[in-house]
Length: 283
Image (cartoon, rainbow, N blue to C red; front, side, top):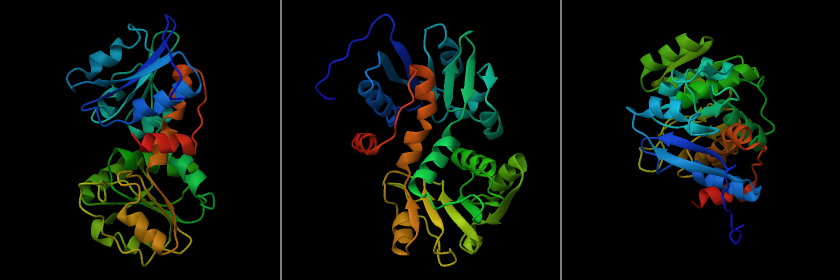
């Protein structure tokens, strides 16, 4: 693909990503790869947009001829209130990461984080089943919320949340319902009946403190998933792998969550494969 030259026309389909900052986002690289791979006359651009300007920027999308956009931190919750319509899953999560400009000019807000998580989990750990046991989620932020909703919708009967701030975990449980909250100090003990452990915190990320957790209570067949992808092999995944667990890294969630938006904006269902993974990681 590196030798191919693409030019834009008056029919170019345009989308992008809003964030503050946005320079760290790998979405332009990801969507740019697909645009070139499929020979689509399209563009996907990063927009560094302040919290003060985000609502105005979102509302301008139809007027500027955009097909839509992604929304990343810190705008996901603000975007929820800036759109004309909300998908059922975004409504449950209470945040938006994908904007789709519809035929009538209205803006639909969706959240594909949970979709991306499940798609990557099922691709990387095909032996995992929703009815195999409980799921323990570390963290209570936006990613935890999206993943909890996705797991509930998939049929996991018991979802346990452990967060350093128990009040935030309790608030999440109250809003979503059917979540069990345990104290952060009890996170290791909560693994006893778990079939899935998911880290959604920044612990273990490059430049952040390590995630400390005793995996001794975790059944050998349980799956361990860490949505952190810098580094790709976190301390949690290394420890789980050494114990013989199936492990799932964080980059695939990023890749799969992008699929619905790309299809809506550019008219092609994209493929997530090893070449895409390597390309995005190299950026």
